Image 1: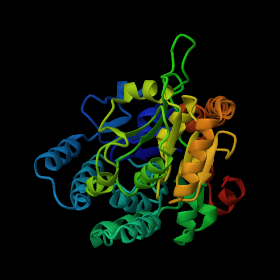
Image 2: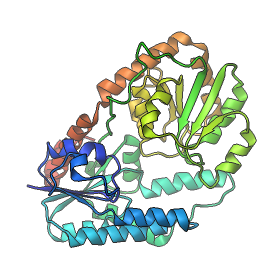
Image 3: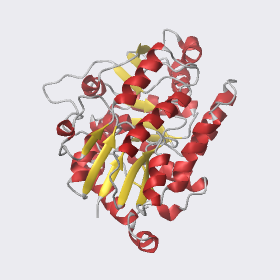
Image 4: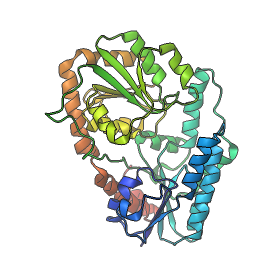
Length: 396
């Protein structure tokens, strides 16, 4: 039995492909990243890695110098270039694990035609669930529906239809697939891991900042819900406290931020190697998201010893025990955000206990990337069985 993996990009596989290759009989890993992201850098044998980087440079140049109004169509066109390169370098396998949502429909069709079993790995929510939640929010803000080109949406749905089994990153994402009609016994959850060597609480020789600082990391726009956090923050007016928003600006961000000018600090981008220091020196992580299939930074914040407040629409809510390591609230709950922020601001003992519990959960329950690879290998093995056997063995 051989397993091929195809990722139009790299996503979490830069961390997980090497340990996964030690657990399953990996044939080839097809991906698209910088030219310097070689097999050796990924921890693979030279014959296993196929980096078709050309489309990455084309797409990035296009988006930088000729930014289109709707970039999703161009992502699709360049995704087809990547698929064509993979098809020219095709090596059959018994099982294929393919990341969907970034275009793998033609690869999936060929694999199925050869009799291979195809497992789709969804690193986002189901397209229907995403569109419904985002369009609801756009309507609330008077922005009108998000227009998704028919070609793009249809092909993303076609990927899902061609999958024999789906791996998703959270229970929230799994529910979205089931609500859209995908059979529940063919959807399994595999949480990502954390680089625990990088993300950890402050050491005894590192001093925390004196401010009570809330950090929210993610593109600033309607999807991540920062406007609800900003409104809660305006109502609180806490002394000796700071709200730090980290992330680039979506198109609607200036209008969202304008009413709250002077109430927050904004960092457009922070290098990943500096993220740990920023998180570990903060007091609380808040992600009031409207829709998020997982939100990796929530797990990283927990590993740094931060209590987390997020919503039921964040996949990473799976990792939070409400009242123990943080709080999980309904989306758009401004009063709930304000109340729970104040609770942790005023309750030093509770904050200290939650911080310790968050770090313990990150290390014990979530684990590192080897733990993630083991979860994926187990689910991949179950998903690769005939359907009646997979139903008996695959965890939900």
